[in-house]
Length: 437
Image (cartoon, rainbow, N blue to C red):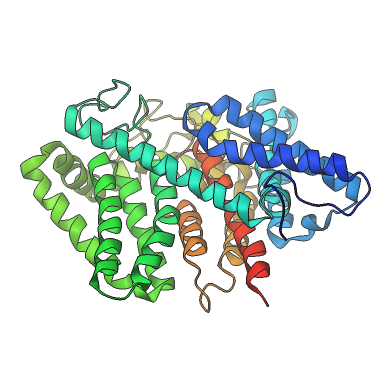
């Protein structure tokens, strides 16, 4: 539908002026969200709240609640409600060990589910808005990459921050946070221009596409965060499966990673020590590694609370409790690491789901992950649009079960995931309609 402005969708309904204002506010909030997720996480929460409230008011005014019928939304609300139930502070029933803070954390997680629906059904309905959004995400990727390159070349980023621990590039941030967001947005950013270059006749287009992919992979190697690099590789593999003409580039990128990492012993020994030495040691001794200890603790909490888990943010409250100390899987650490290993989350979304909601919470979350991927992937095998492929890959690597991640609903990575998920849902819904005769 043609519009005079990306902020002025047409409404042939009563209260059209109010609906238009709600749409403008939601669109502005969504467009600002990636910029706020960079450096203003608290304000990003405000942008999410504005988009959610505008969407709910719009649904009330129009009486359109059909978005609640989506399979993923029903499963998502069931998962959310179960975690809220387990967070109720009723000690006599063994519920809510984290008290009121745990309950509040569980309740507010619904904001992310509503954000995805708001982006799909309201804020990103028009192609011009989605094009603006793509441009902003490209700017975010370039912003991270430029700061990372400056830090690698000169020892400090453009804001004067040195690399973390002398070996991990922080990009534009003061802490080692560059890798996770870049690994999620890099593939959606790369796929459209790479596909256009591959479609050009002659070798120039192919060379340009290869250069883009290799540049993205090289940045991830230099940043020197192992899991973001591995997930980037996994995302490229997924994209290559869906975009056949990309497979040669994915193969070349894989060779480039091996060469860069192997050669880094000469030009960047810290990168080599971390990506090769430390990784191999942790894989060999995984049960007694920090990650193995976290997973051991999570499984013990799930074993002792199989019905409801510990409720929202449960690992934060359960991890230091000696009741859940048990030897690591290899028996090398008698108390599983004690309190020294404790973090606010177990570094894996499925372990987090088990701790927060017990076995049923784990099953519901796993079902929700599948329910998200189904609409994101609908039609991609027959008609693989490059941007949709990139967004599908971004969601896939976030939901990949064999990975170490940030807290699933904690900012900023929780915000990045649900933002990219909502964008992917919107592209799947509206792009198909726009291109259907």
